Image (cartoon, rainbow, N blue to C red):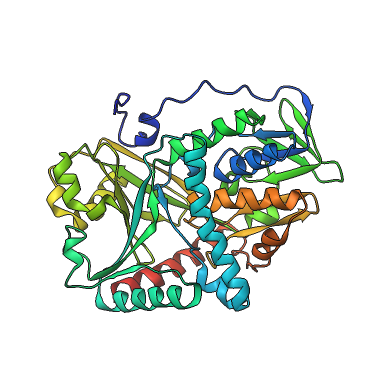
Length: 432
């Protein structure tokens, strides 16, 4: 793979360095009409726009920066079944409804694979996902979870006991694990740009550098930027934590239901191919099952991409590279000789119960947020089910929109300390 010149450590993204973006789409500079206006050029917004256009709707998509600029172009690349807040969803839904919700998450994996094949998206997809436990207590919890998924949902994973774990990962850090052959990993920015190209081909009008400053909530909404506006019948808000970053309070009631969490990734220089193959069996994506978890995978050009050290304070750690590199070396001390030419990060949206937050602000204004680290596959599926709802088939959207969410505390003076205390509690539990 040919890479662009490696930039400074604090700013460089391996993903951006390893793609050739198309020329920027022009900003919106006039009043236009559309059936649907989508706000946000990540997986959820692009997926909704693509499906709606294929259903015959005229769609305009407004992105404040560039397509894939947010979490959809920066994430760990892990394609994961289920929901981060699965337990919370099971508490709120009847067993048959929880099964339907689970099946939606499984379908999200198939949808992603179908789009890669149908749209000929070259995004380095690799099947296989390992969840690893760092001690016996975590292993028991993981084993219970694996058994629960099989008994409740018929979803089978392969259990890896302590006697076999070293055959799966070249690390002394882990006690046991579970292998999911249906989940996997890919280059997230390549995938995002591929979906955007498919949306354009389907007729979606995409405008970049078009931050929305106001949404007129009415029977005939008008979505306004500083230089143009879209008159439409329906609006899909898919900006997540960045929804109110550029133009003021578009939907303050939504912002209270999520919190931005900084997540950070480093990429090493390339390993020799045989050395890379020896790190992780089947080159699966990997995550531990701690609350403050580490996640990592091998790229197609044999780099280790390692993420960890999530920040709940809303600010980037000053020693980002050293901090994440120390976590990497705790797992793979044998990689101490490798340089780290790339590091990047940004914010993802987390709900209190880690379940997704979908709904309507009024009958014709929909929102999708709260993916809580499971958005690579799920956000694409969210776009599909919101397109179904707009087209009059709302059963699946309504099921997920029934999940109740408590708001985070108001005001920075209490919000950050309250979240920090909660995170500290769970991190201390990880050490037990």
